[in-house]
Length: 211
Picture 1 (cartoon, rainbow, N blue to C red):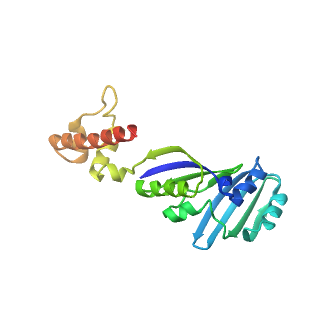
Picture 2 (picture 1 turned 60 degrees about the vertical axis):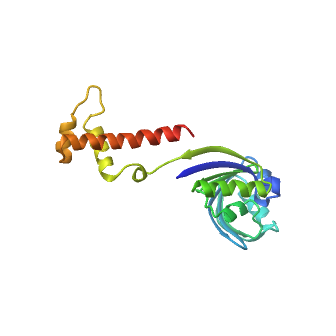
Picture 3 (picture 1 turned 30 degrees about the vertical axis):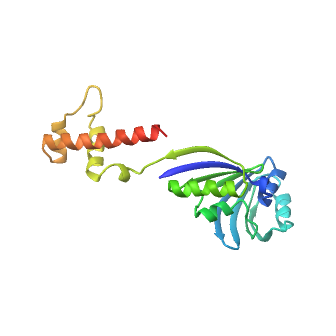
């Protein structure tokens, strides 16, 4: 499944949370969880800052914040939950039906958002950012696969046994025939199993490298 990391400028659309972060430029805002709804969002937020009391007052005096609860504050950080109906920076996520990988980091007005979804949904997200007029930069785009998406169980068993027993060492520490004995199949069958497993791994590697 592809994974994308995007930086976006929340202040460009008068995003109130991004604006607050720009007022505390040395602080790191860590969005730990977000529940998006049609009428707004509930957010759990951790902010690394020695100015916790000042930050809490800023939230309490922000018209876009419908409710705020402080869970913890000390000389290093503040942990709070807030509810808001103003979600311009969140709307592209909701409209594209994506969920970000948490924590989402916000520094000095810029969100760093990481998503793992289909190409179609990721494309929909960037389309929604453009439609909302939110400047963004794609930091990275990676195509990652679970082993189960690349190899069958039997192929994975061959690869792990071959690696553990030194088949891919130079010089080799075991033969195909010995691997066949371990897997309880004939040498010709283990040879075909090897070819199919290695072919899938190589094709996947080349496909990712070409992106």
